[in-house]
Image 1 (cartoon, rainbow, N blue to C red):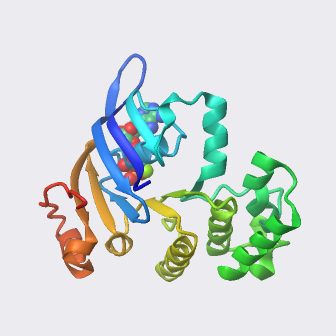
Image 2 (image 1 turned 180 degrees about the vertical axis):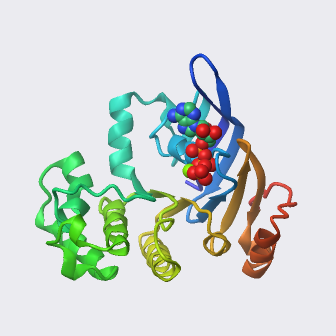
Length: 253
Ligand SMILES: Nc1ncnc2c1ncn2[C@@H]1O[C@H](COP(=O)(O)OP(=O)(O)OP(=O)(O)O)[C@@H](O)[C@H]1O
Ligand SMILES: [Mg+2]
């Protein structure tokens, strides 16, 4: 399957008395094996879009397909198990469960879907912890860890079920720039190793400049969309700096 994410005419409205449209007829298709970054002003609809693609929210209308499957057709229970099995999430505030250790937090997605993790899965959790440099913190509780360490626990957690897609909403928004750079490098490496698709919302120009594709959302619409391969990272960086975004829609040829 070449296209991992396909959106057709996705609309989102919020509110009962005062209805506000937040997303307008979004058509989008994302190829497998890419790192896609969504950028755009605050309130433009980035998180809403990510949550809809990640099955955390339903679109008001339109169709979402993941890995060739129309997920709008699934019922709530099917969506939950699909989400748990095939999707990993990383948020700005990592939402670790305070009463569980780092290792237990990493294993939670497995617990939810399949119950007590076998030795093999615990081994994978240990491998991931080692891979991102938190192996010595497995027995610690979130409050005993720094922000960067907690964020790395959340990254390991997002990878434990070997998801097809990882959605990350400002995953480094809470970290200093050095830790943020390190966390990003690790994330990109692990995603490459696992052949996972990474879809990220970020305010950080440097992070966006490292993506394969950058999509800017403005007022609930795709304002610009470009693929780095064709123009090179330096060009992307320059464009992002000037917020020119004058490119017509990438045709992904
Ligand atoms: N549950 C909700 N009910 C009503 N309005 C909402 C809800 N969630 C988001 N909105 C509105 O939808 C718009 C888009 O919000 P969204 O969170 O997607 O923006 P964003 O681009 O992620 O912004 P930021 O960069 O600040 O995180 C905003 O105007 C917001 O107020
Ligand atoms: Mg947001």
